[in-house]
Length: 458
Image 1 (cartoon, one colour):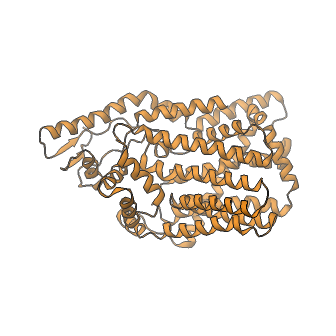
Image 2: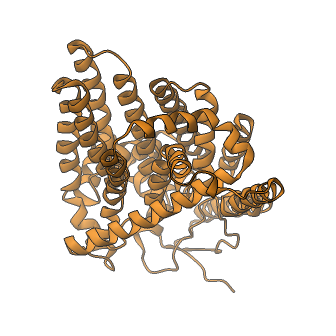
């Protein structure tokens, strides 16, 4: 499993060598050049969104990295940061739960995330999307890991304060990444405050600092003046009513929970996966056995509540949030609770989950594995690999056309449309000539200050 995870990681890193900047990337790069990092953060806070931390990351790449030559660094940074966060949180959670093989489980979790994240293109191969969501996911995993390390150790005042400060610093960064992971962190902070109060008494030094910071920083991000400007620019979206937004969020949370249960059932049918997770399943069987009936009900409800918080911003904004990137956070949460879900299913249904005959079990195991691979990102990756060189060449040809037009003093330029569309690499094209701002910023990145557009297909 470790080898499979590392092989997929290396393949995705290699695909990053063929990725190219698109759309909002040039906007951030232009602002970074004109106003600097801090000025750019203030600009976007006032004119686009309150995501101050993710804006800073995107601006730093735009200012200090040549996006046409070193764009692979975007993919490498987002993938490797997330990989390290998965391994850290796995180590911390395994130590807390008394599980062996944290390295194996960490790689298994990361493999599951990479296989089933809905949009690889905006997650790892587009700077504006990668910087907004993947560092937030990585910080959330570290936040979970730090809480696990705290709960697994002794209760002392100085230790409470130390962990409280670390958690507060992480909360401040998470709040500035995006609204979805911020709200999920609010929910987790409230949940952990309740856990600490029940298990260890007040201990306000550890749970109060992160809770206050995530609420205050979250409010600063949520009420940024740029949100109104952004919704006005997007135009075709607007705000839903509070109750309708809540109903939509509950619906998506329940659908996501159902998908998690289905994935849990399928994984239980696959023999080698069940064998690999034997220790973890046994440990969670023991934990479930110690829970009261009320706790068995409240824990799933708490998870569904986190999912409701996750989907609320997208529901409220009526489409202003990209659903594929929002779903990446739901996959992250699903990854964290997959083994407990499988254990709960076994506890509830026992042997009724499995066919009685061994030959049928083997057949179901094989079919389940094939089904999971078919639903994963593997087919998308396989489709893109033969098209990489063509896509890369088209992008390089565009850059060459811009330089050639500059050398001959042209005052307008129509670029040929991208003919190669990718599933994994982000391949959004320029707009036809409509005086679109994104076309102007694309040209400005190359010091082209004349009209530019993508010509329509012949």
